[in-house]
Image (cartoon, rainbow, N blue to C red):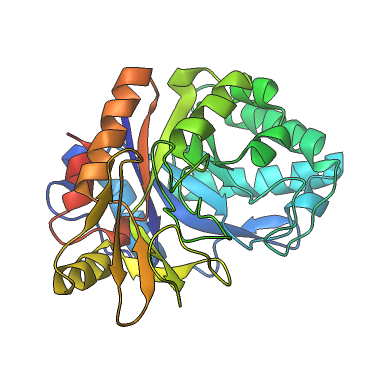
Length: 322
């Protein structure tokens, strides 16, 4: 089973023992600059290069994109643009010694993140992926991160992409309702999560043509906070903001007397009545439920965003390996 961590931000190396727990690591993010992939902004490049020298069995990918990272739509709109972008990414892979490339364009055909988008993205994305696969060859990994909604799935040529990809990582987090306070990374449907859940997302991509063994479920080891709200499942004025990582979530929950848990959704949360904030996130219990789901459904594996959000004891990574 694939066990993957996205590395983002300050990286000095893995915590002790994690090299035995992880099977894959994605370094985030390369961005697009003048139509080419670039990691010039990386401040931890020396640490990454050092890690690559002694990574052992761990497979590593260069992850390109991320929320609000633009340039994709115009870059892949022509054959020349696809060639330029693809070769620039291959050059970075070869320079660092990565085992492959992970695509995190959020999202083709959709300008929700304030970046360029066009209806032609759907076909152009597939053309770009096909070129990357040709350049990488069969021995290198080619994966992608995909939004956990039917809309995101419909904007992709899933069957063609699945034939080219090794894995498709479904970002089964940030699935919050914007009309009432809810979970952001629930596994199953409940009175609170409704249809915004990992199970629905996984089934959507599988029904779209992706084999289950190529699907990877995601864990959101950070909190999403609703402000000025009267509890779970209550009307809200706007969508949730970022609250912080797992450690901050647990510290606040402990002060409030513990965590509430939606057993049907397999989703933890806490509510602070004094500050009127509702925070949802993943914890040990919900991640273990996702691991059981991966095994039951025969999925390719499990991943989390992001490694730095876990605690010093790698509590959530250990849960992913349970």
